Length: 68
Image (cartoon, rainbow, N blue to C red; front, side, top):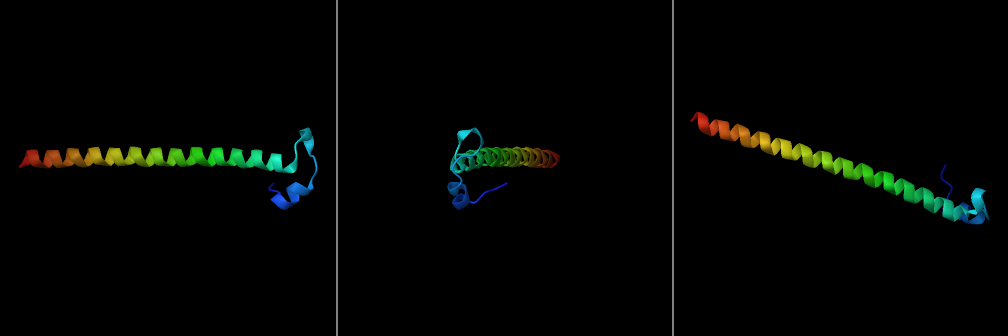
């Protein structure tokens, strides 16, 4: 559950002796890591697909030239 920063700063200490701000910053870092991994996976998939299509196009053009 997301607690707005203004509310997080008004909570003195939560479990583990961490302030609300520290907990929210840890959660933000964790979310950022997950998002970064997802974006990297997306770009890797796009690059892989583009390379595959480029190779397929080359083979089709090569075979077309050989047929003539």
